[in-house]
Length: 272
Image (tube, rainbow, N blue to C red; front, side):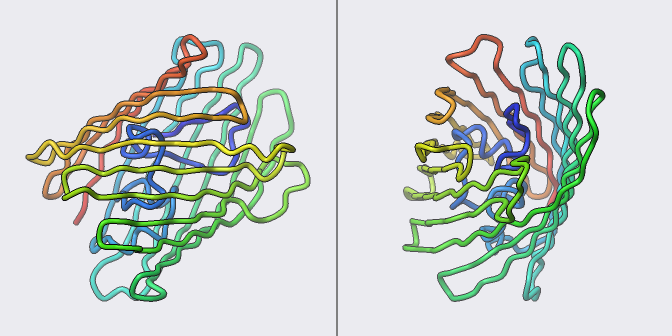
């Protein structure tokens, strides 16, 4: 469920299958699992409890494969003034001469500030260990907002990892998002992100994706990622099924510039 760059902790912590399949978009979209990491402000659309888990393998045949797993629990049951969520992500990045592991603990909260405006906030603790270096633990915060510009159009802004980190292990990222819902059968999503440090030319990345409602709970997603800062381009594909309680999904991501840089993601979640 996670796309991990070698830096391992820049901005976005975790991507759900819904997000990956549609080009890692969704900051203005409600996602029962992924909104916890993408933009907690969108979870105001939830009205229940959710428990989910995911597993992802990145570059399984490459020189530095990454295996990731995640668990998310959210509560936005009826009558709750402020929704809340807990998340845990474990990542293992294997190199020829060493292994790096990250454990990311996060807590999220969100509420509706105005009828058309909601806000979300989060805190995270990242613990990193390496077989050839001294480990460390750091903390940071993220804030996001969602504006319902129209019945069919949502806009969002998210500021990831806003606290200063002199070592630049946690780099702040600003993101803008949009989702247009076309008659309930097609969703068009676009996001823009900009890394605020280690980016002297202030280059921004662009993500775009679409989601088709196939009926009977099935959804098909596809999209693209244009990482201008790192000069990389990706295309993505995803398929999901949403049941009355149990839901599941799969997402595929491929780097068109680098051979073997692919990822497979499986995700399951339950609402009750």
